[in-house]
Length: 72
Image 1 (spheres, rainbow, N blue to C red):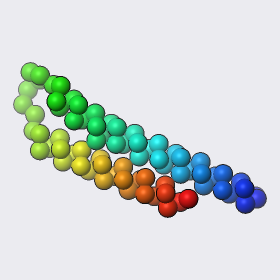
Image 2: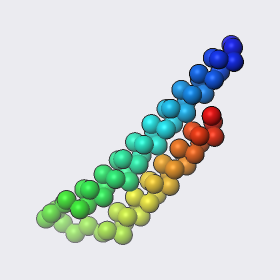
Image 3: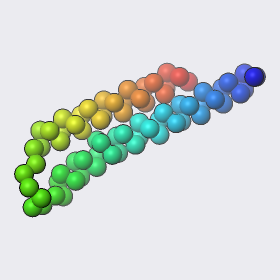
């Protein structure tokens, strides 16, 4: 395996991790907020729980993104 192959594999892995980080942010950190804001009449929702889960998703997304950057 050449050095170019190794570099290409690292770049592909970092791209995959970055895509995963974006997905975690979009689904858990952004869509949950939009869903909570736009929900009307679907029963009481606990905004503290939603914001807490959003914060966790943001941190997980940041950690995955940081791992991708480190791998490069």
